[in-house]
Length: 194
Image 1 (cartoon, helix red, strand yellow):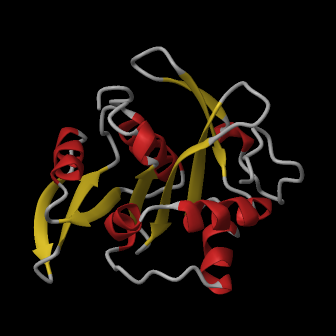
Image 2 (cartoon, rainbow, N blue to C red):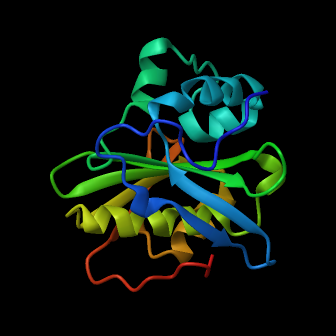
């Protein structure tokens, strides 16, 4: 399987290197986060093909998600303002391993919708919470004032995480998906608290 590079070979114009950063997990392990670039398309496609059905269903709310060329382009060719995606990977070793991806996409002039997916073997380490905070900080810097997030109604881990991170007003949509939101401006940072 392809491996992510800590630093992209040819970042596109507007690439926000300010989001490249080391992440120290509560257990002391170090990871690296950086924005997604178009050159990550093959790696992302390989990760999708290797992902288990439960992970894809939890992220996309459908059991028949098909990663088309247009979807792959949408996921990797981003403008870093109205649409930002951060990849998290291991540090060290010959080939860093992809760990998680978090992204936000603008839904209105003031709101972004966030989503995070963490590989099963890296769950329960605080990575999802750290990614949500990184996205919230970036969205606030880009001028957004609220962030929304959705999860399956039976995903109690996501529900607890979002609750701890200040998301509220969760409402059930279609009997399957819960939507919640959080105010960003003036929101105290809670990086590492999840």
